[in-house]
Length: 56
Length: 406
Ligand SMILES: Cc1cc2nc3c(=O)[nH]c(=O)nc-3n(C[C@H](O)[C@H](O)[C@H](O)COP(=O)(O)OP(=O)(O)OC[C@H]3O[C@@H](n4cnc5c(N)ncnc54)[C@H](O)[C@@H]3O)c2cc1C
Ligand code: SF4
Ligand code: SF4
Image (cartoon, rainbow over all chains, first blue to last red; front, side, top):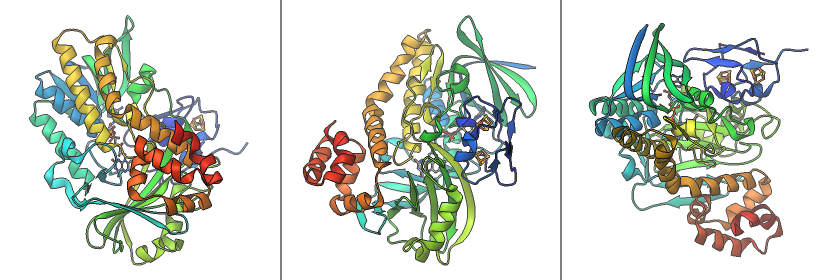
């Protein structure tokens, strides 16, 4: 999973819905940690389409 | 490493955190707000409407200098454009300037005696013998440790306090509305004193588009929609742009509109967490899920619940007992105020999620503004009146019957 930082508006929606808490946020960016399993849930709530799930 | 010791540490300087701090500091307890933003209140991620549903504006005490435009009511447009109006004779809400609003509440908290550390990100919460012992934060890069008798999580939708205490691990994606808003110039509105809402499966699935007038030719135009695949088939951003370009009414109003601000946000609509307290811990505002499950409004509730939290926390500290049992007074008091309303609105939202455009149109023909206000707060008389009308309409009865009878 990748976040397009140019689009991200820091709504924190992705970090709040991630079932395994794989995203770490501060007020400047969202960091994807190694435990992310590319499940895709976060991409479905991104208001601006900034999240792309990796192709398998 | 800096070590601090306070009575109450409040994480977050949004309306929930500052109103908690105001109440607590006024009772003379040693209060500290930790806010990770260097400029609290910015960016604005809000439609900026306050009042109408939920807490009355009188009890919130809105700082004068943040008021932009008084509001008397609303107009809801059904998918095919049928309008349902509600308006009071007197002013019943405001469109505010959220950045001034948040800032003024922070000023009030500090003037009441609270301390505040901005640019301070809380990164962890440590336990000792089963109770929270301290917070770890980074203040402009420097590590600090804060020991507090009571920790208040007023840290919004992605609350670290809620996560680390286990009171809300994560929000279910189906319970989150995803939102984009523009502030625009040269937008036409029907009436400066009415908020406009637009509904429809292809317009804003499981949500609505709002146009909130901010004065002649100036308005907030925004949208909230449910998650993709389950409710939506594209992003909130795409729906909003579609509305502005193609909606039969919206496109005319926004034809000359110029966007001067883009706001991106997430709104928790799943209702309050089961529990918002633990030994020495209180959650308030978005962190607690104190948001109206249909309108997505949260500022008013945050402020009233924050005041309750601050008062209870201060009393517990002054009496030397911050156990969950004692702090439960907060949970009881705020649920007494809003528990029923939130439960009802959540049920109604779940029913309305399934409504087709045809059903929404049919409802718009039947409902008056008064009934709409009544039904979304779960008012029994309104529910009865609506039940009487729709009992003869099998489609609508199937949709809403259970809710109206419950
Ligand atoms: C697009 C949008 C439109 C909305 N429109 C309206 C509306 O018109 N009317 C209405 O009433 N409500 C509206 N709401 C809801 C309303 O904005 C929220 O309910 C309200 O802001 C909740 O206040 P809060 O204090 O709980 O949280 P917030 O206002 O989110 O404040 C939380 C604060 O905590 C800080 N924080 C978070 N994590 C940490 C950390 N780890 N360390 C330190 N600080 C931290 C944040 O920086 C932030 O300042 C809208 C929401 C959105 C997203
Ligand atoms: S959901 Fe999208 S806009 Fe919101 S914080 Fe995540 S990546 Fe950024
Ligand atoms: S893809 Fe799944 S695991 Fe990875 S951050 Fe998004 S929600 Fe979390």
